[in-house]
Amino acid sequence: MVEASQIGLVAVGAGLAVGLAGIGAGLGEQGIGAAAVGAMAEDEKFFGKGLLMTVIPESIVIFGLVVSLILLFVL
Image (cartoon, rainbow, N blue to C red; front, side):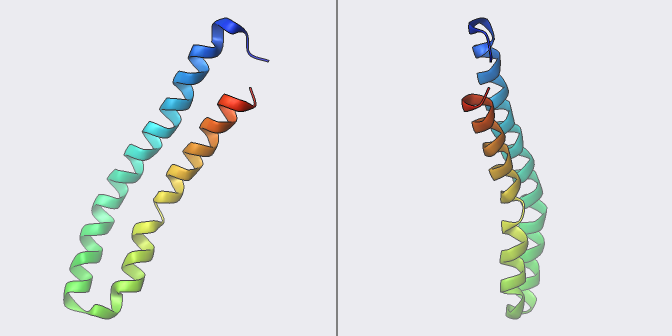
């Protein structure tokens, strides 16, 4: 169990887990989104693949959210 003096540090860790995961996913989607739009501009049948590739980095944010919830409610 976490002592009362460590609750603030746990909250900071949970915030960092979500924030850094969000920044990392955003940076990843930046390049993927540009490439997907370029591919769809040449051929429209790449829409599904481009959409799938832009959604994959969002799973990293969900993992960060899960880690933060574990930190806040389990510890």
